Image 1 (tube, rainbow, N blue to C red):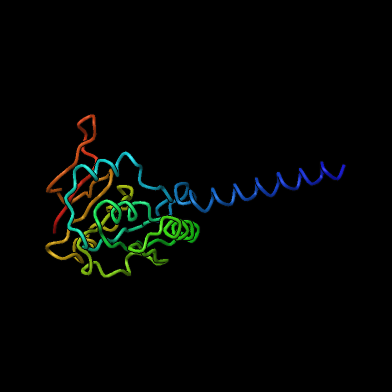
Image 2 (cartoon, rainbow, N blue to C red; image 1 turned 135 degrees about the horizontal axis):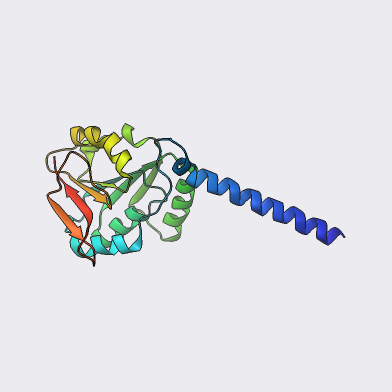
Length: 182
């Protein structure tokens, strides 16, 4: 009888933790909130960037809405970039910091803050993986704050008012990665 009660308690704890985790990570998807949901960059897109991008080693990159910092670790490992990521999701950031320690990643810093507080003039590359409505919300801000030499890398979605100077196509010939300058 005691074992059955303990099993029920464990099931409720695990289910409750699962529901809480889902609401924290995916809550913005189901609301009209402007925050982005936690969706890590897909390996497929990262591999496209690995093949198609030529980035300067030692340069600085910022990830707007970095989640767990997966893209920043990719840029650090494959291109030798120094990265900073901004996000407001404490769970994703903690997980990302754990992954940084696990992978011994010293060139990636994850910051719990709204990315609009970042000074984009300090970065050579600006990376985004945001939905189109979120890109529209930040488009004017991003392009008014970057330097003339900075390159904006947008994963999967385009900015509405700016034309990319280069795109990287997927295996079907569809544009997947969009590169912009001021």
